[in-house]
Length: 203
Image (tube, rainbow, N blue to C red; front, side, top):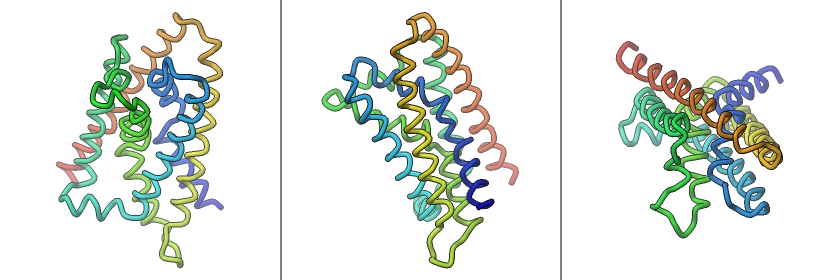
């Protein structure tokens, strides 16, 4: 149980559903309430699939393409920084107005929301690390997989609560909150990216 709690807390901290909620609200703006609720479920399932896939074979995929974990973290940090800067300026975010998939805007729930914003380089690296740290006799990273499932459930619940709060919040409060979360995202992106660069060159 202690091992599971440590794994769960690690994944929950790095995915940070509270920070992800305002981004999700921006993506689903203008959608029907039923579609928004289903999108929250799809986001949770996507995050679980990404984290579970990372725990099962993420290291081998990166090695196949010759990509180090540190380089992956640095690139993901840059993506998060760019999204945070758009939110901080209050300008329409590219993740909300993606012309690449006009026929199905729900694609943005999976990319870039589920990955790399929630299940990003830090979360993927954490899932891979947990799979190695807590091996199982069944040849499956059971603790990492259960922790990923619990994290996805917390994300889903947080997004559903955010949808309720969004109906109660004023537009001015929403703008202020979005800018604040943009600043938080920039800081998180810099931290992830700089740690990746540091480890790439000095470890």
